[in-house]
Image 1 (cartoon, rainbow, N blue to C red):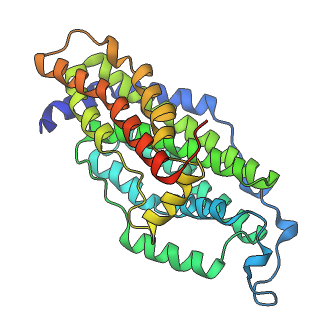
Image 2 (image 1 turned 120 degrees about the horizontal axis):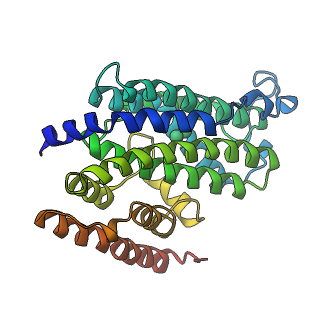
Image 3 (image 1 turned 135 degrees about the horizontal axis):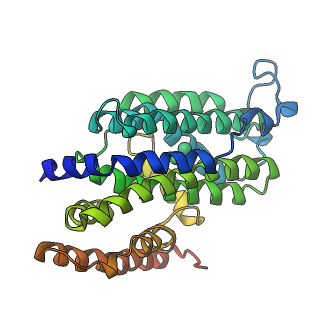
Length: 300
Ligand SMILES: [Fe+2]
Ligand SMILES: [Fe+2]
């Protein structure tokens, strides 16, 4: 892999990173998780141990909230993935610190909601957090451009997943917590998408290889979470995050916004990659149809 070319590109768009970070700061409003948590519902788990009958949210949606929380819990490893690949003291490094600080509130807010509302088994949640963080997370992509493409898609997918999970709780408090977290993810998505755009503007042929590699192998970063496959399947069946959503709400909008179909000035290899990338939505949709037939999942 031509990592040297990628390093040059990373250096060339550092000014855009600083600009996008300024735009992010202007866009984002500070928020405070303590204003969203239903503290009045909180009671001692010693005097009144958890029992499933106390939960108000249906089990599959609770599974989604817990899976989303455990994914947020792995934040130290996401920070490390960027810190490892980006120059120290650069605008990338400054962004990584700001982004990490914002991300940290997500697990705090969601855990506080779940524990006060008794919508998860607190003992199991802590065991799962320990198991998740002991495994950690290692990005499958070594190159910096791939990391930006991946994080663009991952932030957007997380925004959709948090938002849908909140909606399906039928609980106004949970809805507000998840909508607020999803708004942060949306701002993060805009940042990562913008950096990737700046790279595409400057050197499309350098970006298309990692872009194809990432979008053709994309997986949410939950692999070390206990029973990840089973939990992700539950979420897919109730329409929180699945292949059709991945196609409609993540891959198609990204390819459209990045203007992949309209790219000109490509090297011969770049043109081949462009075609391969434009084939990806169809392939994802085929997978979605197979899944829906097999599991009888209704589509919107
Ligand atoms: Fe987050
Ligand atoms: Fe985020």
